[in-house]
Each structure stands twice: as structure tokens, then as C-alpha cells.
Length: 468
Image (cartoon, rainbow, N blue to C red; front, side, top):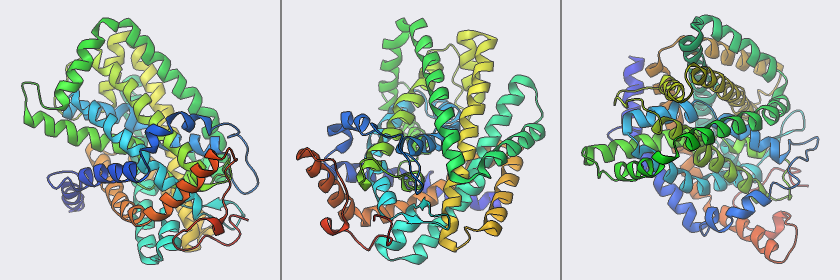
């Protein structure tokens, strides 16, 4: 019965109804237009804002740690298994739609991260916390909607997403080393528990160390694959674009499959509009000290995740000689593609990469849901113990669950979160636009931007003391 309920909801959100596909395309276009295509105009500045990003204080993590924490959640199974799934079901054309949703999603990610930073609060430790539940409550004055989002978040990031990441790790290790899923699940839960017990700062330090290393390693291998097969590049790009618009023999059916799977997996990977990354953005002490600074930081995260890392996986798969079956495939397809380039060593590399990629996501997912304990006044020892126990149990369970069962639950949770978050950020558009204009006006005057609540018209009110 539960599987039928999940399937029905997903059918409306992602299937025949395709509600979220249209909604996310609209949202990306909406914020691109409202913000003057900030992702294009300020593309260069997006990198510049990372100067001085390693500074943190007792209230918040550094901007670089916030970027790495956001990337550690984004960079996971969506980049290796998700891209393979999109290509297996939607063909090479799905890659184009991944790129498009990432370009539009950069504006959406910018908008939601600005709000996460603006409406941040201090928890019982004096550290910054925030996210959609907080800007829904403080900006829109809708506490019931804030609670609804938090419940969807706990279902997603607290339960199903970490289970799905553990499932991908165990599948890769079982495929490569024949390690039983229950053993790998137990080890993942123990290692994750040893990190998350230290709270957000411990998670941020872990992300800061691991994410740059694993990202650069994977990009380097993808570049090597491209150089080895450089003569195939023109044909590969021609196939991507022709398949994306249904110009191949499969026609309109292929167009629909490419759009659906490319956008769905692109969203799952970069999470723009889902309301997850604002939690990392809110936890930072921004440099410059203005909410919009974190908008640029997390916009960069969307670019790195999809336009760079997902493209790397697509190149590895599409430049290989494996057959795309049309049936749902996950991490094993990426492993097979890498093996076609490097032999058995490729299989081992993907197993190691997905283990690192997915494990960082498992850890970051904990931080997102944990941030919402403050909303329910559960950010204390008892509340954290109960949540941590449930989270670790789901990590262990997910390692042995079926691929379809876990991904379906993750898709439903992501879809419900996205519906609530998009509704909220669209209503808060005037605040986002006013803050962006204030920041950019200060840049034009060669000032270091700083935020003063009295200088900007915002909806609702900020937490007393959060910006003092």
C-alpha cells in the first residue's frame, strides 16, 4: 500500500502530471528574469566572491565551508548514478536538459540562499541556523507552512535521501568487491555517526577537507577520458543536441523521455529550488557581510555540481562503447563505462568515487534536517539523540533496500519539499530583488557591501541580534 501511495504521488509530481518539471522551469525563468540573469551577468563575480571565504567565527562557518557542505550534499549519487539513470532512460539528450535546468537553477539557488542567510537565527549554542522553514515563518508569517516543509525535509534528508545514498554505496561495493550489503551498511552508519555527533561544525570541517579532493580527482579522470577519445567528441555533442530535441529516429517519444529524466535527475543532483542548500547558506558568516554574498556562493555550487561534475560523468558514459539499454540503470552503468576506458581499474575507481561522493552526502543530509530541530525546540540532547538514532537506522536499512523502492521515496520527498519551497520563494521575490539591488548598488560605488536592515525593504522581520 505504501509503495502504491508513493507511486501515485510521484506520478503527479514527476510522471504524467509532470507538475514539478513545469514548475521548476517556470521558477528558473522567473528568477532569471527578475534578477536580470544574474547567473550570466555576474558569472565572473561568482568566483571573485570566494576571496576571503575561509574566514569563520564563533557564530557561523566560513563561506568556503558552506560551499563545501552544500556541495557535499549535492555531489553524490546524483552525479554518478543519477546521470547514468537519466541517460539509460532518456538517452543522450537528457544531458542537454540537465544543462538547461542547471543554468536556470543557478538563479533559483541564488534566490533561496539569499533568503536562508537573511532570515537566519541562533540556536541554543549561539550558532547560526536557517532554511526555508525559517524564512517561511519570519518572511511570510505562515508557521503552519514552515512545519509542513520541515516534515517533508525530515522525510527526505532525515530519512530517505541518506538511505538512498547508502544503497548506492553498498551496490557499488557489492558489484566490485562482493561485500554483503548489511556489512557495508553497518560500516557506513558507524562512520557517519562518528562525524555527525560533532554537529554542523564537524560536518563542515569534514566537507572542507574531502570535497575539493574528490571533485578534482574525478574531473582529472574525466579529462583523461576525453583526451583519449577526443576524435569522438563532435559526434557525441551532435547526438546530445539531436536527441534532446527529438530529431533522432525515436522522435517525440525520445524528446519527452530526455526532458523528463534530464530535468528530474538534474534537479536531484543540484537541488536548486528544493530548499536544501539554504540550510548551509544560513549557517555561514558571510564575506562580505550581506545575505546576497551567500547567494553567489551557492550559485557557484549549482554550476560546479551539474555543469562540471555531472558533465564529467556524461562524458565518461557517452564516450564509452557500452550499450544504452533503455532500462533503469544506476551506478553499475557508470562502472561499466569506466571499465571500458580503463579495464578493471575503472571499476575500482568508480566504486571508490561513489563511496566518497555518497558518503559526504550522507553526512551533509544529517546537517540539513538537524537544522530544523530548532524550529520544534528540539535542539537539545534528547531531540538530537532521537533524530540521530532514526537517521543512522535508515542509513543501515537503505544499504539493503531495493533500488527502485529507495529512489521512489527520495523522489517523493524531494518533490514535496520543492512544491512548498518554490511557493515560498516566489512570494518572497520582492525581498530577494531588493537585497540584490542593494548589494549590486554598493558594488558599483566600489564599496564592500554590508547589510543594514533599515536600508532595505524586506518582508517580515529578521531575528533580533542575527545581524548586529
